Length: 160
View: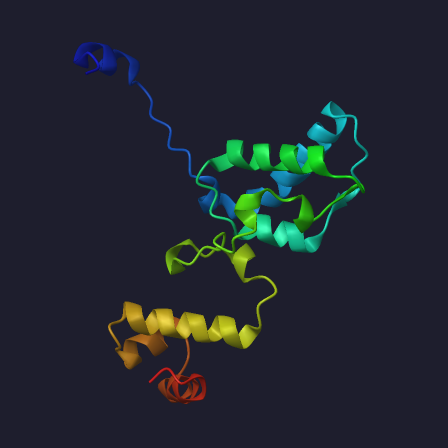
């Protein structure tokens, strides 16, 4: 319904902004920035955030992008009473356990932090096998390991 000629006059440069879920490495920086900003705005003394709360925020899919993160940090700051933002300060949407990214394509490195190395290795082998349609020779090549090593890992992790 937008006038075509006007659209083409305005559409000189297009800029693609990746979603916050695609820029998971920015989340800790944004958390710190918003904590300082809202501590000052609401006249609160916030010393920091617990690793558990940071992990929850890092693993959330952020459909509302930076604005949603900003609102969550402001909410946490307002309800906080002890100067340390923790999981008990998180809004209700984080209590239902539905905050984890389950799509393998959306798993960021930050979401893997704290997981056992074997679990990560198993996940990568399974995903590589899926991507190669079960072709073990191709999967071994993509993973940069020998076929015998791959066969041993498949057996070890019960991926057959």
